[in-house]
Image (cartoon, rainbow, N blue to C red; front, side, top):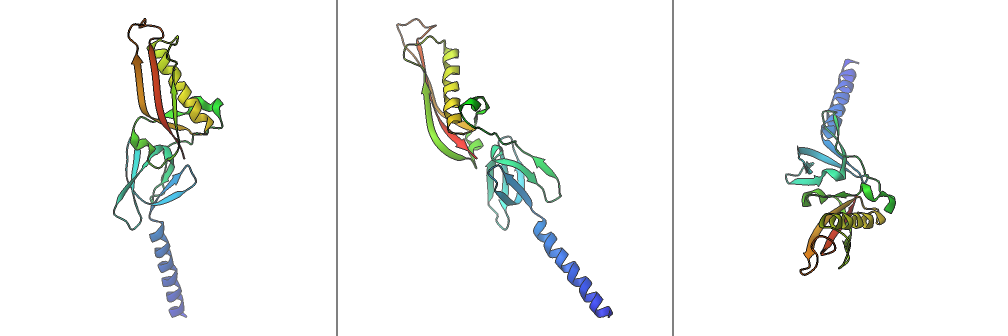
Length: 178
């Protein structure tokens, strides 16, 4: 009887050891519904660095792609909230990415562009604001919460009055989603 009890206790302990060995991983919960198992190596301003289980190569994901991290210790850290864009009326929620690293792990959906007219009634600042708003509206139409501006030019036309309508703003951007 003691031999069977000892064997049962060893079996339970061994099973618990195996299960806890697999649970000793960090879990990245992504906004797109996926989960990544591995070891988080660092959390930076724009990205989270991690290694997949049984791999040595370090990977990076944008903080915007990650909802939360469940650490092997049991602690959960929120990274970002999901930005929900339902159409053009949500254009003010669209975020302009400041760095190329911020797009890592996001899905590129489309290229968009916007500009002011050749002759317009905008100052340099109001023209810039108008073109930025147009980009955000285009991204919102595509249900994309992120844009990365890849081309930004202001052309000054000599011979025209330099305060009103003499500057044409042109911007191009990539749209990203989860």
